[in-house]
Image (tube, rainbow, N blue to C red; front, side, top):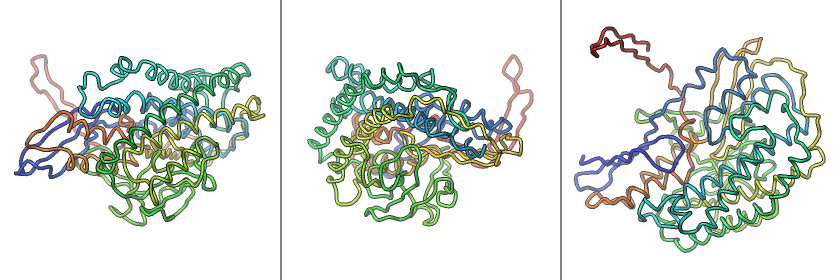
Length: 472
């Protein structure tokens, strides 16, 4: 084996990752690894807490998508408490979730991904960023900022905070939506739909003009998994659907039964596990999640503008759309859907109702909450004692579901575009862009494999070791 190239850190992603590209004796790429070095212990240190604290604890896993963890936790707590929220509370939770979808997708496409498309993968990194976008196309950049702000304002109007909210509770939500807030959300909705359509135009134009790159850039088959409601795109509450690489239905299942269908394996180069479809085993059971997957498994979208875009998306291929770079297109279709759904929800007659909390709690001892986060399927699974004290937690975070896909993408792109005899920054940026296409949230994606060792070294003032404590 020859040299090793290290990309550390991977840029324009949430969290920390590095990539190692291993070259053979002829300086050709032999193997590429994606390393997630962060370890988060939320599962373990949640033990001993009261179950109803989880919707406040788990948003701290991530400042980018706190709503996703907040709502998945609340749904798990509903099940632990044996309580069904009133319809108005469910509508309000969905509205909060749509705000999250809009702000997260806007942030990713315009701020993190679009510089590669607008400036090119080989552009000077000094301008290949949101600052460069502001200088070259200030109108587009400012509209992008406004779109993300709109999503954040939807979240604030409902929960009182843009991040780390304490609003959804077991059995519902803690505060209703005011008429003034509803009207403020609706007042900007049409303009925001126009901005999302502008972004869609940018993405479609680039993808159409660069088909050679698209076809060579991490274009591989896989299975796809996501949530649907009777075949329609669903992001808050529905059944899971899994299709194969040809588009054939593999299975549909209740997300609460996920452990019968999803298993994880670990690797010694990363803290991030590899989920796969359990009945097919590893590696036959690998799949992809998030916007590309959700559109591939959906038959339709319930809002008109997004549904028309879905038809165009479906026309790109016979069967599932496989190319990784189409994640950007799919993400913007979902943002458009989110904006349309915000209007639908705000115009529902129950959205201003104060019937927002069911207090008839009876502890069941177990609850699973599942939601389609911006980055894919998110599971929160809580076990409690008879008093509602957490005894065990399992989280399969959205980004984790795409670990195989990201790893396969960086390996594929490195082998296609990196030449060890003349490495350039642009070549390595393409490898990073393969990760960025999946919009990973790496800071919240890891959990322990069995027992994690703890080593504490005590040293004196001169730096000399005095004693070591080891816990396996």
